[in-house]
Image (cartoon, rainbow, N blue to C red):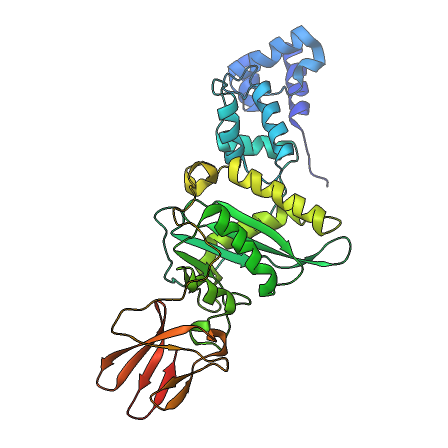
Length: 384
């Protein structure tokens, strides 16, 4: 025997039919159908005014919504999103509020729902994230205290050649100082970029990089490379993150994610056109794009050039008067009291200083960097 299935419309039709027969009172019918007398009179009134169509369900949406986002605000938000497809609702609202400060802008959550409703938000796959181990992070209190530099992962342009974007940024203000497309990571192409940046913005106190080429050399003490040796000559301290811990340069890595999405998807036809894309991104990133870590201000509002001017002359590194100074020979060794001590070929023709810290125990420095310890008693040089 099949189930006796009845829809709400069937129940209403049966209710009206029983009411029209005048065999039952309204109270009896409402009790039999399990509804209140108010509901019974409602359906009887609707049937009398509209006929069978009056028994259909009606929309429960409110006739008016005083807090609904105005159409002009919604259209401006959609246009800004189409112009900046990588900006989220918070960044878009900051720019729009500056442009139209008296408009009734919605909350960022409402703006996000508007973008989603119009298909301008791509769903993301949620990944389980494991918090990285806590590592010491160098903080910058003012501009040029610390610059960060790195190579964004290479990608192929339309002409099938590889592009290696070199990026340099100021840690405190997040100002993107340079973004240059290179055909390789060789030092010969990197040093001219830093020369131009030093001439334009002055010298920073420190530069933070990873341990890859050309920023570091694994076989050299303190992983010094020819590039970082040049920085020490200019009075800049090179700082390296620990191997396998990119989170120590997390601000720079996060900028790379935005850079890749904006400039390499899709890539340009060649290096010149790709560089134009990089320049456009850098201008927008510095002058227009709000940054949450800067209280939604663009980096250009906070960055100021360094007071330390750059000169092309390479002065020798100087040491205090009580240091024993030796110049590294072309083969990488120094002459010390009748014997040769190998230091590094990277420091060829550079002066190094030895400070006696105990009887027969010496500390070897290159500028402010401690390279190792020399024990004169067993003639052992322990490099770092």
